[in-house]
Amino acid sequence: MDAPRRHAETTAAELTLAATPIGNLGDLTDRVKAVLGQADIIAAEDTRSLHKLLHAAGVQFSGTVVSHHEHNEAESSKGLIEAVRQGKRVVFVPEAGMPAISDPGYRLTQEAIAAGVDVTVAPGASAAMTALVLSGLPTDRFAFEGFIPRKAGEKATALAALAAETRTLIFYESPHRTAETLKAMVQAFGLQRQAAVARELTKLHEEIARGTLAELIDWAESKTLKGEIVIVVGPAPAAAQATFDQALAQVRALVDAGERLKAATRQVGQDTGHSARELYNAALEDR
Image (cartoon, rainbow, N blue to C red; front, top):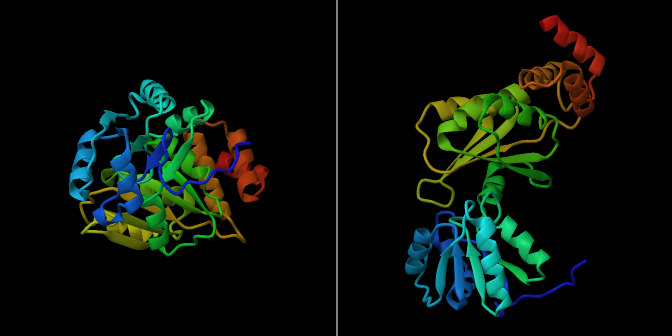
């Protein structure tokens, strides 16, 4: 077990993961500004966005900027860790938000810890947490699912596995797939599941739509969505996590995605509390 460590300010020879604003420049903290100004090396997911941020925030920086993204993360991580070992102050920043949350940074963190390199975080804005708070849905227990699969079958399987989840769920999605994903969620979670869709968080045109999944489909199809999207889905009812019809719909989705009927009914039965035998017989009648 790693020994506990304290970080009041940036120290020499460590890796700092620094959050960047998700829209509003005012969310760039004084600590992150100081970390960026003191860095010997800033590894950025998008170097152009970084230079714009440094200029807009008035951060004076004389170190080196390097590119670090999902396509070069394996090789780049080695160089950054070696730089820390040589006494350099290295900072990684994503294009927007918290590093390693659906952004590069996880692998770098993992390898730095394995190499015995000191790692700390200068936190800041997070689209997932901002949307959760704005949604008005339960915040005491939640799960971040990030981006779900694009292909219909894989998406249906992923959502079916979450249908009985009693925690609030948080998803990222692109604007042009939002309506399609909401429809897939209806198939897995039911028309009346409470949810919210947030877009352009912290920006001038920030918008949050709340209602049932059915209502949100109408909302999404009534406009041309732009900007980054976060979908927040409320928990399944604790008393009856899924009706029999909803459980049967989950079985159908799993079978359509390639799962064997017997395995699908066993899995859904375990997740929802419904009889696997009754689900199996009902699914057979559909054929």
